Structure formats: structure tokens, C-alpha cells
Length: 419
Image (tube, rainbow, N blue to C red):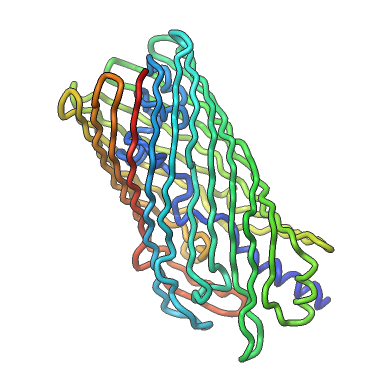
């Protein structure tokens, strides 16, 4: 075999683990509003009252009769602590691999006439990351993997009749990614090399359509479909402390990297039932094609070029959730919700850069109408991300373990103004 080819193959395989990390969050149900955060996302698809329906189900905008703006901020507090059982390369468990971030959002709806609505959403539909540090026991698969996605989503809705409304929109998704992985170099005195890819980015677009159907004065159905979105991230790649010849010569030829993957399509359905004048019950179910996300292409360029594809062996996922909203008084209400999402990957295939697992959400919120035009809300979600078991052999070294603590807390505050 050609030794140069072998080394080139190794250098590319080092990058195979470095695809987007969401810290298990994947598509976020929590978009920063009480209807979303306070119901574990269950109310999203049947939302006909809030301007955030622009993004969650644009058909719901027909239930809004005045210009409405919602501005909010969401604090995301992850605690991701890996506990290793086996670590042949030594090192640390990485401490808390999550970082606290604050996420702003804005949603606006404008009625054009009795039947047409126009809306705009600026939100964070997905994102997250892990940062284990340079000495992590699984550093040859991932040290740091962070992804940020900003979605700008215009949408339009049309009221067909008193029962049926339709909506459609498109999300322009800006994706940015930073990826770091260590290189295992032979020899007892050899230190680790490192691969860094910083500020890889790209724009993509994702279409979505929705419908709401008011079967009776008490019963409403909703459905949303989102298309897949292909993204091709490009940016700089740097190799540091590569001392093994001819690998050090080979890596010096590459200065650009490209990672291609697909945000999956999904279908979400929901139902809302007005049990009493003060209490509303909700449920939702969805299917997401995460098997499409598993196919990834990685390219390197510079003086030479290389391209390789691999499959993460991910599976499609499903979600089921239940929620309620209860009016405490004319100006105050509370919500609560619970949701479950299946795991997209088996324990044997799970990787350190993207330790996705099953998820369980518990949510609540408090909403207050301050005046005829002004309202505010506070909401929170506890998201358990599963055990995240891993048993991997990467660059000749094995690490095995699971997350002893693996959850995210979402805290949101919003202000709503109705003109």
C-alpha cells in the first residue's frame, strides 16, 4: 500500500468525528417564548395566539388580529459531566463540557387584511456544543465542538375559511462552527498534535408549511412540515505540533476545510382542546429524519485536495408531548408540559463530539397581562439528555463511560406588545 495514502487517510479520519455538536439538543423545541418554553414545545404547532407562530406554525398567525411583537431572551445553562470507566490514553474527564449562553429572539406579525398575515422571526432553531478541554480522555475524537445557528424566517398565512388556515415560510439559516481534535503521535515522549477548524460557516435555507383546522369552538388541530436543508461549511484548518514525517509535510499542504451535512426534514402534528373556559389541554407528535444527517462529507484543500464521506449510522427519531395552560385570573395564566424524544443513535455508535441520546423535557411558565397593549412572561425547561454512553476506539486508544450529569436548563423572559 502507498504510505502517503495511508497517512492521508488517517488525517481525514481524524476529522470524521468533527461534525456539528448540539449537546444532545438537536432541533430546539425551546425558541424563547412562554408558549414554547413553558409547554416543552408541545404548544408550538397549535399556537394561534402568539407572534412566535411565525416560526412554529405560520398558519397560526391568522388567529392574531392586531400587530404583535414579542422580544425575548433565553439563558441556556448546560451541565454535561462525563465519567470514564476506561481511558487507555489517560487524561481527564473534562469537567463540565457545557457553556452558559444567552440567546435573544424576536417575532412579529402584521395583519394585512381580514384573511392575510405577514410575519418575521429571528431565532436560534438549533445549536450547542461541547468543550472537554485539551486533556480529555476522548481527545482523539473531540476536544471542542461548537455550533451556532441563526434563523431569519419570513412567513405568510391565509385564512381559507372560519375553520381552515394555511401558512408558509422559509428559514435562512446561518451556521458557524468551531472544531478541535487532538492527534495521537507515536513515541513515549511525543506530545499530541492538534487539528483546529475555526469559523467554518455557510448560509442555507429551509422551507416550511403549516395548517390549522378549528374543528369546533373547543378543538383545534395543527400540522407543520419542514424541508431538509443542505449546508456546506467552509473555513480555515490549522495543524499544530505535527511531528511525524511525512504527516507533518502532508498536513502543511492543507489550509481550507469543508464539511457538508443535511438538516433533516420533519413532520409535526398537534391538537389543542379547550377543556373549560380556563383550562386548555395540548398534545403533539413528530417524526424527524435524522438518518439523513448521518451522511457527512469532509473535504480538505490547499496545495492538494482530499474528500471523504462517512455515515454516522443515525436513525430517524420521534417525539411525544403533553401540556396544559390554565388561566389564574383575567390577567394571569400558567403553563406546564412534558415531552419525550427518542435517541437518534445507538450506544455503540455514539461519539464524543455529538453525544446525542434520548431526551425528556419538563417545563413551566408564568404569563401576565400588564395592560391592554403590554404583557410579559417567564418560563423554564429542564431538559434531561440521557446517559450518553460511549465506548470508542479512536486513533488506537479506547475510552468508555457515560455522562453522570447530562442536562440543560432553559430560562426565558419575554415582553409582548400589541399595537
